[in-house]
Each structure stands twice: as structure tokens, then as C-alpha cells.
Length: 287
Image 1: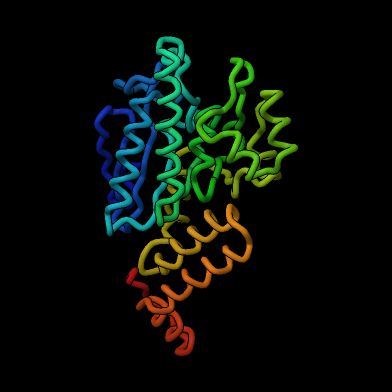
Image 2 (image 1 turned 135 degrees about the vertical axis):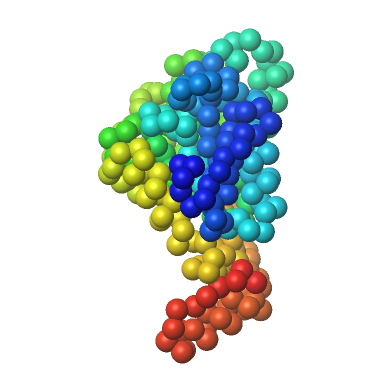
């Protein structure tokens, strides 16, 4: 992916996540670890198993993208072509105390909530299997795009005698409904990308090899960058959709009105309305 849109990756502090920003403002967060959750070496490619160290790297990357005014879209993906992420490292979980496990889940909750609440569109490019904690990360994105015939999704934590404790039970239930989510989690069965598309767990399923998929996702994501899209409006739509369903309907309507009022005062709203009247393509600035 490093040759696309001028993207140059740099590793985060623990070398478990690669981060780079394209010339048009897409921050790419690439999960990159081996099956033990350690940094990749040489020609290794991930199953991108995550540890607390990787979650800290994700957190660092999300905060960097959030504070970068030149970033308008965040793209999550995994190293290699077989896995987006195989989930949490079982070796790590087997070697730490119950207290550490609790705080590990708490920090992961905080990190994924930060990703979910950041006022920038988050797109997940599911380049391979997304299981367990890998699916939990993907579900915190706003839009999920998967590569056809490249993997499955699922929350099989029941087979370990536990549940999906970093947002899995909450987000899966909200995304596909209580009955289907409960069945999926208590059986521990994995679902094909095709079936995941049918139940709205993923938004798009695209054909192509791994390289084409990465390029196509970046191309598609570019529609949400400046000057193509009013990014303040994107952020406010996201906030209304994330917060509104969790509050009473009349409060959601009030929130929507306040978000709209803020947009009406923006330069981009003036540009968008003027462009429509003048029958031209708008050029948004994010202001």
C-alpha cells in the first residue's frame, strides 16, 4: 500500500501498528503482528493478533489522526492478505492476572469508543478473517468493506468459556439484532463474508486480489476527502447516528437540530447551497 497516494508508513511505539497519511488526507492504520502478538520481522505477514501493546498503538494512531487537521478519513486494515485480525492473543491472556485482563478489556473499550466517537469517517478494509477481537475492532468502524472469498467473521469466545468483552456483545447486537447476535455468539460459529453482507454486518463485498482491494478501498474512500465532501457535515451526521439511537427520540431530534444549526453557519454549507443553485460542483474546505 506504500506506493498509493504518497503513503509512507511508520510504526507506532510498540511496532504493532503502522500509520501513514495519504496526500489527500486518509489516515491508514494497519494492524501488523504475528500469531503471538509480537512485531513482524522480515517477510512475515500477520494474522495481526492483538495484545495490550497493539491496542495502545491503535490508541496512539487514533489520537494522532483525530488531532491532524489534514486528516478527514481514517482507514483500518490488516497486514497481509489472510487476516484483518485473528483477535486477542490467547498466549497473552493465559499469562496475565485477572486484574490485568480486566484493565486490558477496559482500555480496549476506551480505545474503540474513541475511534467510534472521533468526528471523522472510519472505514474498515477487511482484507481477510476478522474473528474475536478482530471483529470487535472492525465493528467500531462506521463502514466495513470486505474482500470476496477472503475470510469469515465471528465471535467464538464461547469456546474459551468467556464472552466478547471489548464491545462485541454490545455492537454485534446493535448491528444485526438480538436474536441473530445471541445465536452467533453462543454457538461460536463463524460467518462467511457473504452471509455477513446479507445481515448488514458489512456494507460492501468486493472482488479482486489483495493489492487491487487495497487500491480500490483507498480510491473509494477518497470521495469523503476534501474538496469532494463537506467533512463537517460528515462528522455531524456520524455524531447524530452514533449518539441519537441511545437517547429518547425527542432528544435525538433536538440533537439533530443543534448539529444542523452549526452546519448552516459553516462556509461549506454556503458553498454547497451556492454550487447547487449555480449548477456546479462544490469545492469544500472543511470550514
